[in-house]
Image (tube, rainbow, N blue to C red):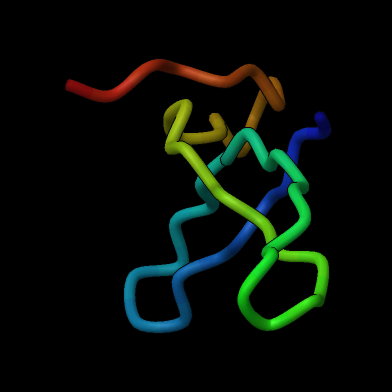
Length: 51
């Protein structure tokens, strides 16, 4: 489990996601499931939860 940061190119807002890896039995490949945590404050770097 790790935290992934992704920036939206249109708005410039950075979002934080929780990423969990798992093994997909059908494709026999590792996959990821991401869950949104919130927005990242550009000044402090703090993650603020979204609704």
